[in-house]
Amino acid sequence: DDASNVLVTLRLLRVLVRYPQQLRTIFETNLLNLPTIAWKRLIPQLFSRLNHP
Picture 1 (spheres, rainbow, N blue to C red):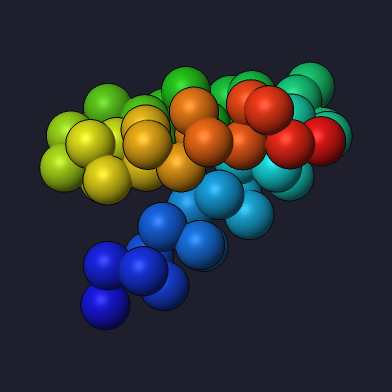
Picture 2: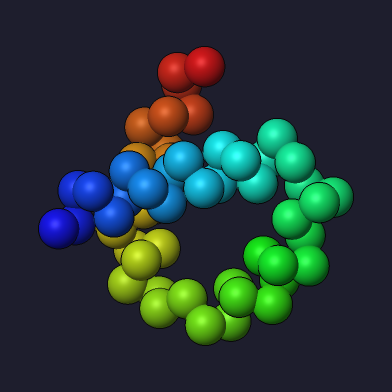
């Protein structure tokens, strides 16, 4: 469902932020294949987490 997809995506982004050099190529390669709807669902969560460490 949408909630679990958002949660998994947030976890993947956290890993990407922690290990950017190791995952850069994989991320850049697959970013083009990611549907935009995934970002539309994720953006509100990203903004809400900006104020929470």
